[in-house]
Length: 116
Image (cartoon, rainbow, N blue to C red; front, side, top):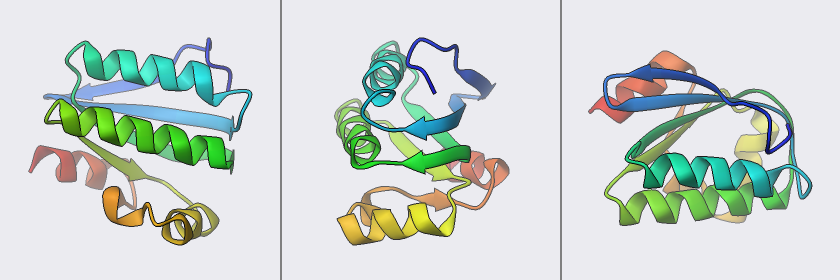
């Protein structure tokens, strides 16, 4: 996923679902992080990130999630992750990040978590 590639977005009420794709590594996450931080700063405080089409999550991708979580929290927002495979969920657990990110099985559940 290139940071300059347009994001696939779905809006429902005050929530924004962003479908991520490809590899989230050191070459792709800086641009993506900037795009997502811009979304938060422009008032889109409730984000669902769909990992269904993500093929690889590196430590730089985890760092991006932490930055996004901190920014969302400072703006009284929230981030929910969905569509992660078992390897990605294990990475969140091992890194100690899992408690900071509500996780949903699918996009509908992610929207429900954000809307409550």
